[in-house]
Structure formats: C-alpha cells, structure tokens
Image (tube, rainbow, N blue to C red; front, top):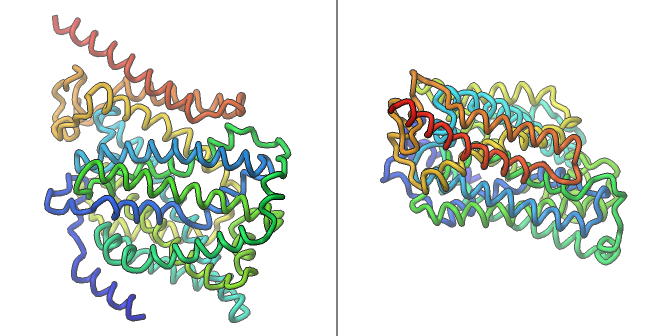
Length: 458
C-alpha cells in the first residue's frame, strides 16, 4: 500500500505537460536504453501473449513453434526498434512521422485505423484484467465480480495513462512493476520446465494444421501491433542507439519468452481451449499460482496504459487542439464499455488484420527514412508547409492537408499482397512479402514522381 501511495503522490507532483504532437523538448528526452528496455520488456509480457503463443500448437510441433517464435520475434522486434529509432531522432510521435510519406490527410487515415486498433486492444486488455482479477477473486472469495474488477482496472489504467510515459516508466515500472513481473514469469517457467515432460514435448509432432510461415506471421503480428505507437515513447529517449537497442532487446526477449510459455501451457498442461480464461485457470492450479496470476494481472495494466495514451496522441494528430487528458478519459471509457461485451472469438483474425495494415505501412516509412532520405528527417519536412522536399515531393501539408500518392499506392499494394498471400499461399507467410513489396513500390513510385515533377518544372 505504501508503494501505491508514493506512486500516486509522484503522479500528482510530476505529471509532465501534455505535449501532444509537437516534438518533445530536448530537456525532457531523458529515457536511457534500460528505461526503454524495461518498458518494452514489460509490454511484451501478458496473458494475451500467452494466449497467442498457445495458438501455435498443436498445429506446429513445439520445436517448429519455437523456430517460428524466434524468427517472428526477431523480425517484428527489429521493425519495432527501427521505427522507434525514427521517433527518437525527430522527437515526434508515430502518426506524425507518417506525414512525409502519406501526406497530412493520409496520416489522418492511418491515425483513424490506429485509434480503431488501440481501442480494440484497450478493450482486450481491460477484459483480461477484469477476467484475471475475477479468477483470483473466485478462488479466494467464491465470486468473480467481473463488473466490479472491470471498473477498478479501468480507473487504475486511467491514472497510469494520465501520468504519462516518464512518470509511468520511472516511478511505477522500474520501482515496482517489472520486478514482481520478472519473479512471477520465472516461477511459471520453472514450474513448466520442471514438470518432467520437456523431452516428450520436444518430440511431439504437430498436426500440420498451421503452416510454419503462417505461424511466423502470427508471432510477427504482436510486435507489429505496437509499431503505430512505438515512437510515442522513443521520442523521450536521450539517444537514438539506446532507443533502438532497448526496444529491440527488451521486446524481443519478452516476446520469445511468453510465446514459448503459451505453447508450453497448451502441451504441458493439456489445455483443450487456449483462451485467457483457460490459461488463467491453469496458472491458478499451479503451486503458488494465485500469486503468479496476481503479478501478471499487475503487468497487464502497462499494455492498457500504452494503448490508452497512444490512442489519445493519435487522435491529436487529426485534432491537435483537443486536450490530451480529456482524450485519455474518453478512450478509457469507450474501451471499458467495449470490454463489458467482449469475446475472444476473433482474436487470431484480429492479429492478422493488424499485420495486413501496418506491416506494409512501415515498409513505406522505412524506405523513406533509411533509403530515400538517408536517415535524415528534418522537422520542417514533418511539420512542413507544402514546399517540395529533398526528393522533390511536396511536403505533408501540401494543398492544406493533401495526400501523397506514392505512399498511399505503395501502402495499398502491400495490403493487397498481405491479404493475397495470407488467404491463398499461407505456407509462404505474408509479413515479409508485403513489407518488401511496399518498400520497393514506394521507392519506385517516389522516383517516378520526382521525375515527373522535374519534367513539369522545365
């Protein structure tokens, strides 16, 4: 209780200004690599990640699932860290970084899609928080009280989001949250590996219902879901290399760890229905399971915090004058309302849909930043007035909030490729082809646009 009182006092005294979409001032870029490691490691842990890992088996063997987990985690975490690198360089949030490649109104389209997915994730997280708390309450007091725990969880997550990234990471996560979460994760891991069935699990074949590359897509989808908000936090980083390595290593380790635990839960504990409710019930049945489940419950709040905070920032990309704190309140309330009626029947489809939209989008951003602009994003090209940029393409505010055709067309091409491969060639895997198509299409279309502008000018 003393820890919570101290934290709430710190929130009241040190809540940072709501900067919105403008670049974070140099004096507030204070997060070191281990701060971002702690943040992204924590965001990679949770019951929803366990449940996603559980979806890999028995479609794949455990050995095949592990290969898919490692490969998918490396790919997804690398994309996540590279996008965070762009944010730390500019100090701008993710949706604003899309203005040079999509145009200002084009970035509004991305913002709307991002807010939609973040509302979905907020509802999922609040649902899991209430479900997990209810499972603990059921075991201790004989009643779940889902609605009560939904209200309690919602209020707590709202306070976290109002505190902002600096308060959350420095005052809550590093002083309390990540340490108890690590202990619980280690305990669950030791319990599962100590069951004496590890050799049997490693030798158990899959049933072939899940192609290997489709499994990789499922793993990639989890870090990809964070791509649209990673720069919202890396823009607080002191140095770009620290932002990259903290994000890549922190999220990569957590994603591998908890996807693997999810697969072990299904195989080692014979779960017939790998849902968050079933996983929570299995944890309760372990020795010391209630304590472990309580700690995971605490950790789930960080995912809700990030979803709520970044949804508010994404809305501000469209409506910059709206109060960030009131947006946080509104997003939290809507997420809680959705959580009151949520089911998990479409969870896997939800992950795949996220991947189809955001994998190619950040293929475009990577092509623009790392190749076309050679890792230089001047602020006037992000918040520009419409003059042609270094590539000869009009700035993000061209025509008062125009659209950039090369970026939008390349984005559509990537989405089409992702959906086509996912539906017709699932064995190939859709993430890498859609990323590469969007990447190459953007560079080609941008070059064509530059040639046309030069021809018109002469």
